[in-house]
Length: 207
Image (tube, rainbow, N blue to C red):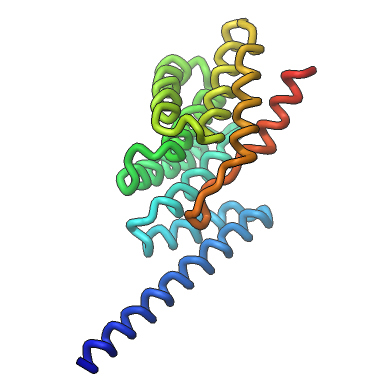
């Protein structure tokens, strides 16, 4: 009985230690990112992902950093490498957490980076996929502010491309900001981005 109790205590301590390592690693990765060191941050998130193979979040952040770094990139080889890694890691995240609206939005952002690089080449094939991804995310999580805002911004971009009025989507941006004010997740390191960008877009709606 004592042996069993000791084993349980050791197991408990080991679990706490692993949780501490994860928490400290994630905090350090976010700090690197905040310090304008995205490559170092992505590498650390990747190492955490390899150790936390049932946790979608570090995979998600590897994908997100590589995607953000791709906007404005002119070198096709570098862009392909970054977005290839982003897609690889978002697919791994999706395998861990299927039908996750945050992952669906991030997948759409990868497609958007390709379209932003060369709309003539990638717009036809990826625009339809993005519309499906945003629609699916909205069906799963209609109260998620990132889903509502990201879909609205995508719809605005599509309308602008075809010379249509973007005003109808401003109400969706307003709704997203209301949702941002009330959205909370109990999961540590859950995505929280989007509010600042939504505020900027809403200002553009008013101007």
